[in-house]
Length: 249
Ligand code: GLN
Image 1: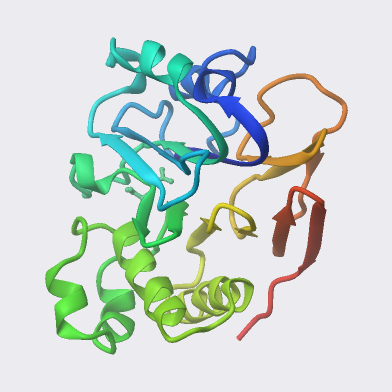
Image 2 (image 1 turned 120 degrees about the horizontal axis):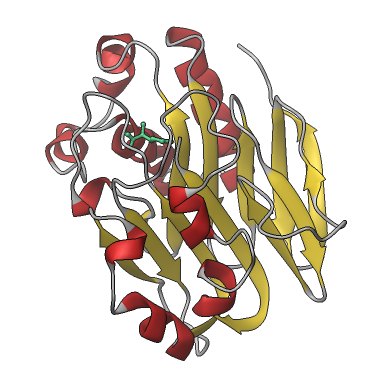
């Protein structure tokens, strides 16, 4: 069920995150190791969001086609450098459309967001939560998918000034309360801090010199990868990762 990663640290080429590692995100699109029954490959799109090294808002490149079929991306990735990246490959949940705009990262202003998982009972289970959002937000959802709605719910909290870690934790809690057994691995960054929930899917963290990597699956055999246990919230910066329990409702 989708594979995603986030990196914050010294500037690197996108190629070193997407293609170079032996079990890179590109490889995980066709040979993932840990899908937990949620599909077999991640062929329904991909997206990369990166922060320009000289500052400013992140740039996003998203497609509704397999990452391996994009013949332009390898050269683009080799030529593009960034110190903060969020990328994902998508396996669409049954019943959800395959569109460029359904691929993570979703974003607004400084934020990039990805969801690995599925909302159980979609859409009825979360219709009540969705109904509390401004009508405009619902009319302008990126796509009619669970992930796009999760982004709208989280974004609503961020716009209200909630702190990112609390906003991710609360979004997971409120959705889990009405849609039990959902898989809600969220990933949010502003280019400096990465917040991630581990709720139904795997996530591993690795400190690298001057930075941090978070990924659904370790992309190499480095012993520095740590699997984050279920039910945790990770708040990571280049300086380190803090792992706490996700609150329950
Ligand atoms: N349910 C989401 C979608 O269909 C995410 C899927 C996933 O994690 N595989 O886009």
